[in-house]
Image 1 (cartoon, rainbow, N blue to C red):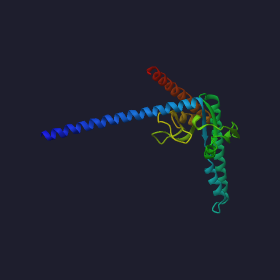
Image 2 (cartoon, one colour):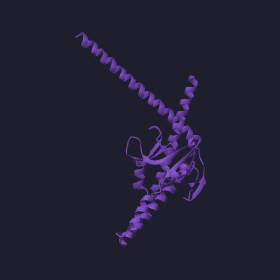
Image 3 (spheres, rainbow, N blue to C red):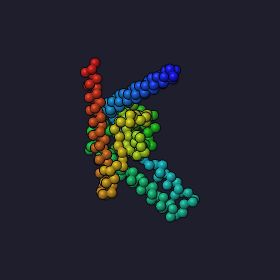
Image 4 (cartoon, rainbow, N blue to C red):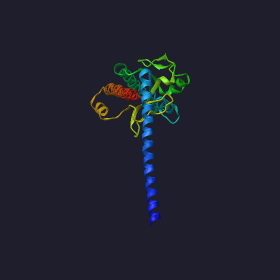
Length: 234
């Protein structure tokens, strides 16, 4: 009986130690992620946001290849070319609206736009060159920008879900902490606009960009508050 009691006490102590260690590890991880987020928001505030716009080149190129194939008759060719044209037109309509929304409602940092297809080439040239887009979707020169002065805004899956969103990432495409600001594309507000407003593209772009600017400002304010509190404790 005494031996069993000793074993039970040891087991209890081990469980307590493991629980304490797990709690400590979680707090340490939270602290590391918070520090990474604070550093990233300061980088962005004094640096540049590069928005990676979707080109949809693969979709339109696939349709054009299908239109030229021997298996595609005249009716098929007409349909494929029409769908490719619609993809490009929809892409340009959204990208122009998104850029216009940034011009009017984003004030947190400098911002430039480029196509996703050009990311590797842009990265290889120090994030500079004639890869950036003006408000008419014409190519222009900009940069180079130091990798430690930029963040990317990329369309991707949101943290912890399969929802489509716009996420901020490091220049090497690595994710930021999960609590860092991001945008969910399809939510109650954007869906209401989609079904109720013929100008839903412009309206939703304005809504998303305003929300991004607001959440970045709030996150930055919290990071500065933490820095001031840490300074007072020294």
